[in-house]
Image (cartoon, rainbow, N blue to C red; front, side, top):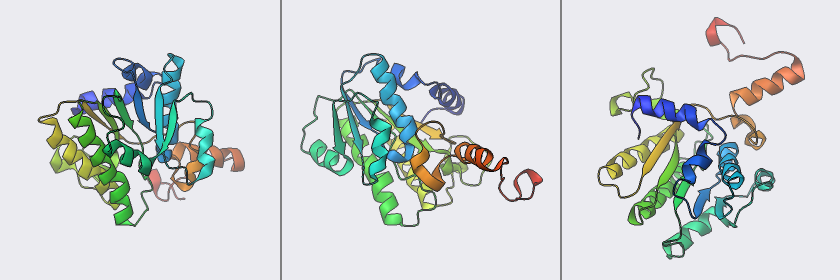
Length: 239
């Protein structure tokens, strides 16, 4: 993980719509790209930015059990789509050896209210472990989405263990993988970069329902009702 100042600067830079495309094309020949519907807007933005520079050799990995999410990919030029479970099987069988230049792992279950710990850890932690191990074994850069939820209720946002205390199993799944990434970095052969997003908002997030960003919900509240309903007690205001 980056140092705090570097991390904040990188997070601000990553909000630029072309950032991920610039990063990928520094050494990219072929992309294995986890579209990860819970972060659909950020992920399709990566593919769009690559497309804008002529890169179309992109593999999108996702779970389309919620079929309507396909709309986030319609305007992206990609080489292939692979289901998230199938991808791990094929990865383990060596089908992509020496064929992947970088992995953008933005996918996860981002429902902070999800209480099924086995599902959360399988989807968010174990899946990420498999990816980072493959990337390290094959000298592949891994850029992945962490979360500011690892800080829990704290107010000191410094990437040190004493400031990390997640409050739910979602935050714990992200926290645990960050710890693994830290250990891997000590002898890493491929770049590992984790970004602790505080919030992700923008186009293509409508499918996320109640887990869409606050900005998305406030916009729709104002458009439909002419006012924005704040969280109860937020800033001293009543709901």
